[in-house]
Length: 431
Ligand SMILES: Cc1cc2nc3c(=O)[nH]c(=O)nc-3n(C[C@H](O)[C@H](O)[C@H](O)COP(=O)(O)OP(=O)(O)OC[C@H]3O[C@@H](n4cnc5c(N)ncnc54)[C@H](O)[C@@H]3O)c2cc1C
Image (cartoon, rainbow, N blue to C red; front, side, top):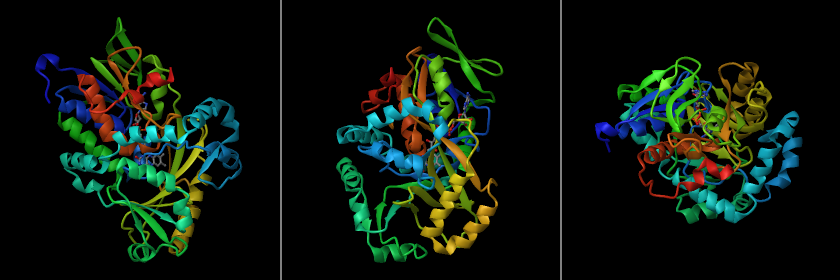
């Protein structure tokens, strides 16, 4: 839909991670002019969109906080090698978020409602990304080859049966992979994993950095301009937006979209919304030249990490570390990922030893999942101005949810019905 020229707006998109880029492309489809305000490289190392697990998993509908999770919190605090850690000294500053987090997942009714809302943003993720990559002229950056959760045995699948049933109720397609098929498809996998659950509609962004760059170039080819600056606030005429303020010149505009990932909190506050947004820090390690390919992304049930092929090598991505946004990386967390991979793929033990010696090199990365306590992003008009829109807080699933989030932002700016109830995503839920 292209708006008549008298309705054409100038829209500033703050942040060129995957969410900002998808929003930019969708508002361009409506005929608006776009200015991308981003101080760094689109999808560069500073962005969560750079180093994630690359998973496009439509079944990632359950929030992190589920009933009974609070019982595990002491274990998280004490187990230095688990998939989740809270750095003790930051506990007081994180306590408020943690309480909201636990309360958001008290009952299965809450989880079911949250999962249905997340599914609205996830159901066609791989197809949507494939279409965007095609438009950008890089179709090979998206693989639609499914994803697989791997388990030691049936008891481990049974322990997650409620989650799988919930996915089934939403209409998500998956199937059990028996031992013989698992061995045949992933011969290098350790014998201790005997079963899989395959999500056929899933896929992968092959190289998220290259993909963000391709989408950024597409937006520029379609007329967007890039303002290389850091947004610092807004200026208004009454409550109508007149410009995005930056550490350089102001950027005059009619509308602004806050898509600055974990750094969105201060901007949202200046737009009238106090959102409990923190960083769930995560890590990746790459094993270059692993010597074999894997047919699909794998997630071991005991490691809660993604193991996936990328052009740089086998990427191991995961870990949740709660600490302050600006605390230095603890590369020991990345070493835990290497320990898991030694167990999953014993043939990689020597290569893992070599990678471990290059700790802190380019094979290592730490990034910030922009996380709200209730597992839903903030998408919608800001309380302080009808001209500022939030598009942040996607936590563990920003890559998955970015295309639908971009479409939702465009619909809200246009005053169009998105086709589902988008009020659960409003930042006003935290008021
Ligand atoms: C280890 C790990 C694994 C993950 N695995 C997956 C996965 O497999 N699948 C999935 O869907 N998600 C995954 N995620 C989550 C996903 O990466 C994020 O949800 C997503 O990238 C967030 O995108 P974003 O555009 O909101 O933020 P970002 O990618 O962080 O981009 C924000 C951009 O805003 C810019 N910016 C910041 N401040 C300002 C400012 N003041 N002015 C202008 N620009 C600014 C930054 O420079 C940056 O470029 C993972 C995350 C991690 C850490």
